[in-house]
Image (cartoon, rainbow, N blue to C red; front, top):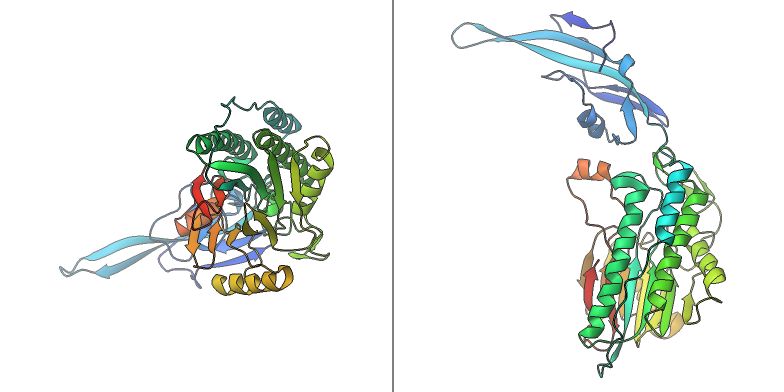
Amino acid sequence: MSLRDELEEQSQPPENQRAWAEITPDGGEISTGVLPTPITTDWTSVLVGFGLDPAVFEVVDDTVRMSKWQTSKRLENGDRDIAWLYSYRARFRRRTSRVLPDQDIEALRKRVAGWKQPKRAVPKPSEEPPSTFVVNWADLQLGKSAGGGVEATVERVLESLEKTVQQLHDLRRKGRNIESAALVNMGDPFEGCDGNYASQLFTVELTQREQLLLGADLFSKGITTLASMVDVMEIIGTLCNHGEWMRRNGKSVTSDSDNAGGFLMDMLFRILDHQVPNLEWTIPHDQMVTTKVLSDVKVAFAHGHKITGKENDWLNAQSIMILREEGREPDLWITAHKHHLQVTDHGAYTRIQCPSMDGGSKWFADSKGIWSTPGTLTLLVGRHDKRNWSDLEVL
């Protein structure tokens, strides 16, 4: 880190040595206040202390000013203890965009297209009550740069898909009577480019168009792979916050139906419905809760961004509304959005929250010291178990 010539050494501290930051959409100015040790190269802790993501913002080296002064106090033996104190003032700015070059994007699409399903044995007949193998793809947020970026996310999805195929095979070998499978888009398949949070425009690695194309590639691969292993393949979608189109000042200005998550399902339907004969589609228009009866169990799927107040109160109220509108309340709730696994037994129903498939948030981990393990939530849904579900795994 270079320091400007305005370096000051003095015996008295400069005036107004409190820590402060002046933040604008593109950057701003920051003052550290009094520090007992000098800053050498790393401003990460300073930026985090002001709630700024170091992956998004950087200090402009040639604007740094340092003040340095001595302080002292008399010791018990009569001597004086001399120490230096420091204070810094600097400007910071957003880091430049990290959009992937075209050749890298094309290599990713070829990687998805070239993935081959491992060969599996033919399942043995089972006398157990039937069940549905439910695969929940939640919060891929394709285009996000955190956690290795798009390349790492694609690798996780393909590795998870291979494990999912193996899991379906293993469950049948255990004697599970799997009559169908369901691939559920649990929301936020894309990161979007702008409007969801302050740093988004400067950190995404894919344009909106590239995100949509890569999402279509991955979901097509997942659908066709699982459809080849079952008699009935359910395709289910939800609407989500990162899918909200036409945002202005962080808010959607069109209807709830104008959603990238819904568009993805519509696009897949138009491409695959006449090519793959055993697909059944459940695509929301503007509904924030999608319901489907799977192996006699009514499941409510929601991304979860509309949950307000106490979650249990929201779920209970939604269950009553679904009962009045559809004549039967959900036996099982599956949500996403919060990026970590959680299972809560409410008696009348179980609420299962999906982990995410994205690379996480470095800023959140740095600030809070916690993170979640990415993966695909899979489970069996049916009357074969008194809870209406079993064999939950994160793959």
